[in-house]
Image (cartoon, rainbow, N blue to C red; front, top):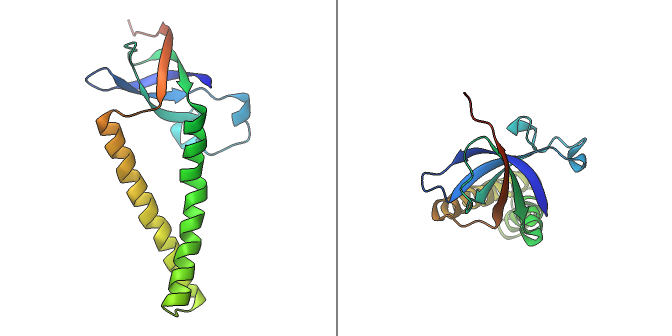
Length: 141
């Protein structure tokens, strides 16, 4: 899938960059990315073509990456919630209220580990999103 975006920062080695994606028709009514401002999403991407900050670019997102991201962010946390509840309720014989809190604790641990792994991947420069072309550069004069 290809999508337009704007480079907001480039790493010192110029090999990777953070890109905000433009809001598309599919974004209408969704508030999932509203914390990033006018862009719909903030994505870490390979920058093999040497795009600079404020360049408008076209990025290519592997379909498998989008699916896997959805699983990591939406499906697996639910699994951790139910696992935490069941483990604490059945094996430790805690009441349902405490077990529910424990389930949310399992989600917290999961997202902490996921955040750490994501930061490690970024430091290593591993990414499945690629900047494929630059449209224009908005240099301040």
